[in-house]
Amino acid sequence: MHYIIGESFEVPAVVRGKTDTRTLELNRLSRQFTTAGTYSVFYIRKLYKKDKIQYTFINEDTGERHTVDFDTTSEADMLIAKLKGESLPDYEDYYASISS
Image 1: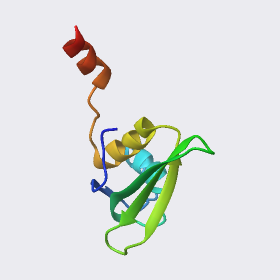
Image 2: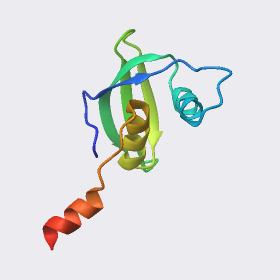
Image 3: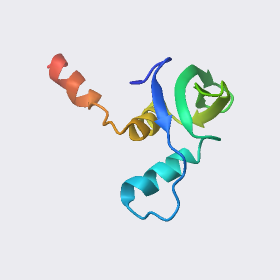
Image 4: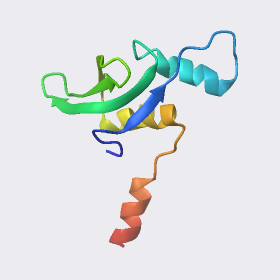
């Protein structure tokens, strides 16, 4: 888990008429949220009955809460990283290097 409670990120408004890859990807990711704005990770919990990880995000502009169920925390990290325009560190390489 790379991103923790309190991490903020921007969800842009969907842009119509553009065909570049970055805009198309941001449009796809933004559709998972009800409105554009600044969101932060508010709560993370394991859903045992569904075998999912549920993230609750809060829109810092409106106070609206939005929940998304992920298969793994890595999936949630990828969503946030893409919205932030960041790349995630390779933890497997890091842990392999310190354990050898």
